[in-house]
Image 1 (cartoon, rainbow, N blue to C red):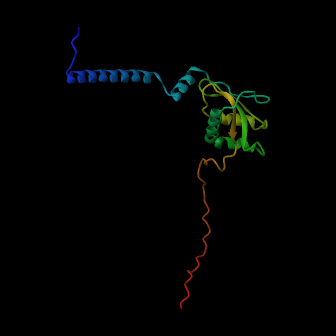
Image 2 (cartoon, rainbow, N blue to C red):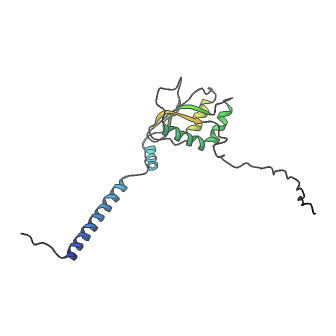
Length: 182
């Protein structure tokens, strides 16, 4: 039979050695796994070099029957905010445009716009909207319906501060009212 180790110091040293070995092995495995994973942006840049840029096009007819997704709507709202300066000239071609437009978006594996359809947009505004929206970064291989904000006053920050701010009119100061003396 094997002799039992009864010395507490020996048991502590053995346990500490095993714990240190386990921690080192875990750290090594984590390091190897992190080295394999890249960020989404790195992956999209690599895919941009591997895949030829698509010729983005306008869809014809009504919007396809695909689901609306919250994630895509959030991305399109972010892109709309980033590109509001580019969208402004397009909206001049769309009289009485709504506050938001329902759109269909499809992107390639690198997150570049492949197809855009804007519901109820006039034909003169659609190519401009496509050219403006083409500059955005989309999720990879996404296809779906989303809402694009078209009015940026109120809930959105302006791209630049106003060039000139008129000073507020100064009100003449009234003399302080003195309490009547008795």
